[in-house]
Image 1 (spheres, one colour):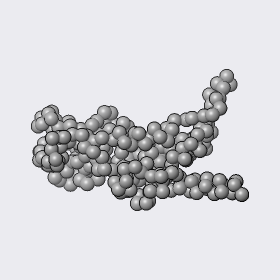
Image 2 (cartoon, rainbow, N blue to C red; image 1 turned 45 degrees about the vertical axis):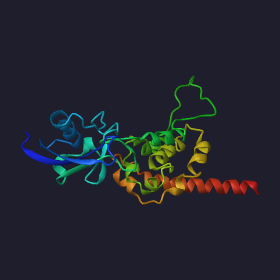
Image 3 (cartoon, rainbow, N blue to C red; image 1 turned 120 degrees about the vertical axis):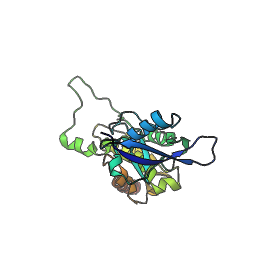
Image 4 (cartoon, rainbow, N blue to C red; image 1 turned 180 degrees about the vertical axis):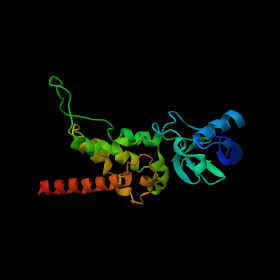
Length: 243
């Protein structure tokens, strides 16, 4: 039963405005009311022009990420009862704002396409003898980076991406590692050319904020360091092979 009231400060922005405007709201909430529920109620009851992204509402699609009281979070997994009031809701940092809480994340998806985000083989595997199976040990290597839901929280928390938008960033690095470590893939060399090149993993300063805000514990910060090691070993092999 909804009996308590929560106060909100929501960032509002339209292309015609030069700067975002902070608007105050207030509504009733219950023990299971999430930030996403609150945004829906505000849109339905208070202001139909309020814009925000959402889809599954179950922490799977990653589309409802916003800044809540200064931290990137999934709105659908953040409960009002756990937050200090007034609750300030803003769009993700480091991205251009399209309207209110909706940001333009197309840049990251372009970077994602550049690291071949799928199993890519030079040799086809015949299915006559069944599926191309993996052992439990092989699956374990890709399990953690496979949990990424592309929520962009890591980019919003990453100071390196904030300083250099050309930086591939934590999610793309984790995605590349997911396929590099896949026993069925044969395109690691092509990916690494992109990963260790200009604006690649070397721009990562290992602050670690990306891992702290990840809702799926993907740990992109550690993954980026592993990619650096792979890059160094790859370079060393090239140098040795030339001698």
